[in-house]
Length: 128
Image (cartoon, rainbow, N blue to C red; front, top):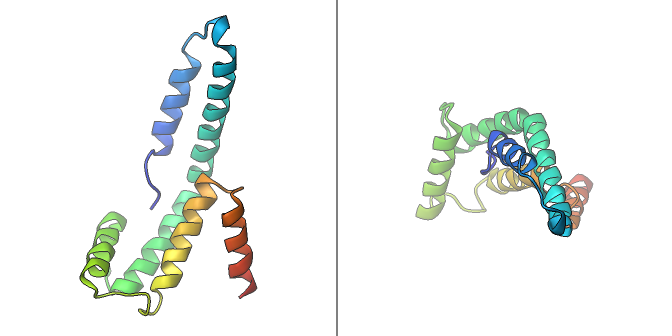
């Protein structure tokens, strides 16, 4: 489950920026904000492209990990957190580490797909 802002929130922020008149003296700042807006659009696009499959995979992993048939991804994530906090699940729990890696890599694929640490983690995980 990806974190806020959601694609609609990102798109609304970019649209608001694009409708705001920019005075000529703000050119360098406007160029920077334009790059930020473009990055926001890219994040929204990747979330729309990857989100449904990522959420379905996360749901299936959580159902298996928690032994639940719930279809509520948010509720399952709360349950995961509660069990982790209580010590009922640890990194020794089969499937937990793989789940945490998968969620982290899915989030990075949306938010920072060119991040060197993400690329290194992908390479490392594909080599094993």
